[in-house]
Image 1: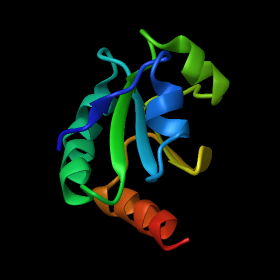
Image 2: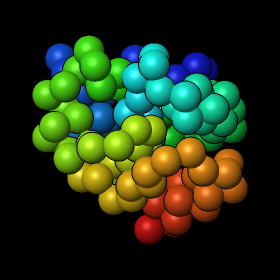
Image 3: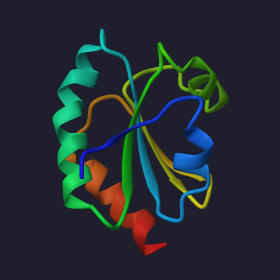
Image 4: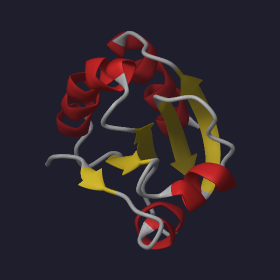
Length: 108
C-alpha cells in the first residue's frame, strides 16, 4: 500500500481517529530534503503495511494542521498513536532512524 495523502480536511479521520499508529510526513514540493526523504517514506509504507499507516501532508496546501502541530521546518516526520503525537523527527534522516522510531512506538 502506498502512503496516503493527508489534508487539513481528512487529518482528524485519517490520523487522530485511526486505530493504528500513523506516520505523517510534513513536506512541500519545493523542499530539497523532502525529495530525498520521500523514497524512504514510501519504502516504510510498504515495509510496515498492516502495522502502521503512512501519509504525506503538503504544508503549503494544508497550513492549518502544520501550524497546529508547530511544524516550522520540513521535512518533519511525526508519529501519532491513539490521536497523540508521540515522536517527531526534523530534517532528512537515515531510514534506520525512522525504523527505530516506528519500532519504539509499536512496542509501547
